[in-house]
Length: 425
Image 1 (cartoon, one colour):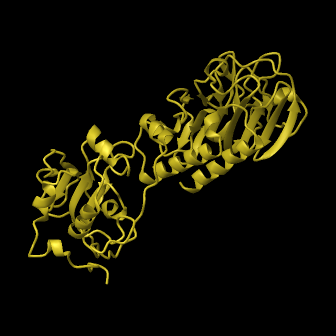
Image 2 (cartoon, rainbow, N blue to C red):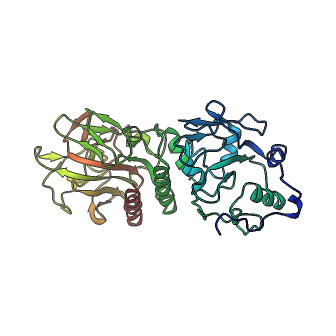
Image 3 (cartoon, rainbow, N blue to C red):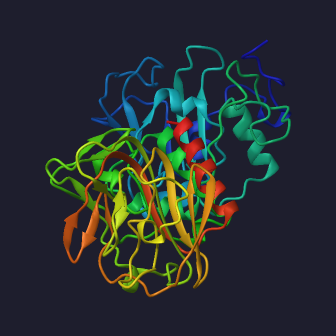
């Protein structure tokens, strides 16, 4: 039955009630250990001797356990020791300080944070311990932890006869964060929910696996939770987007640029000087849009700098190279050459004589000479003509990229990865 010990006790533990509190306090394997005591102020007091009290935000209980109905959240002190302790799980610091709910405390199977909670609903929480980062548990310690903390019998990955059957197990697991995820979230500027962090991490992991991530200089995801993170470059802490004249940001939708009011985005990216991967004969720019409106102006540009414009009635696959081009023409350009239509639009120069254009996975070839890399900042939602924004487009931008040349497989990976990201919102 759920809640019953698989084996009630070990011979070594027999002989009456055992003082587990005193036992674990002197074992020196925890950097913080809260043990069945009522809060003191807004903290759960650490009895390990390290002074790492667990902070309570929104305290709504005074019992010597955490009620499952509590709406309070809990966090560890922000110090290097506890960050190192949590590194294997990235539960308390993911990647910055996380406030954990009562539901989250009992939901996850964690190797470095040991939690005692009731074996059946409503799952009140009794003890919390965070293991030292250098502690490697012996089998004897695993046995004792399993019995005293009433851990699930398969808590340590294999059956342990001293563990318990738990009505809510097996539990959830947290995926390991990519180093790039942790780095990006460090400059993102706003705290993201657990689900959003997972979504961001999954996209980065997929693009890395597909070989796309290493080619990117700029990836700005405008279809984000808030306007702070929306304009951040995921690739490096530089070349972040800058909205001009207040284009409309809508959470999880994107940014609407407009001809009326000259609303657009500066990228802080000058291809000739800022491209690590973007070079003259290996370059790509792209963006995903929706709600494209071709009324009004006779010429519109999705992304551009010192470029020809794209007439709103241009035909996909047309042979007039000047209208869709990248690093081509008498004046070097990043390309007003992104085709204005809903979906994922991109231009890639693959050699001195050829560039490809894509719309939603359909590729068109155009031949042209390669004259140089643009020396003006790339704009989104219009073109930068000698530092003057011109040829505005009415469209909602979901993301934009600037990178080295992309192959057909890369283009597919960009679209596939982002489609999965959107599905996870």
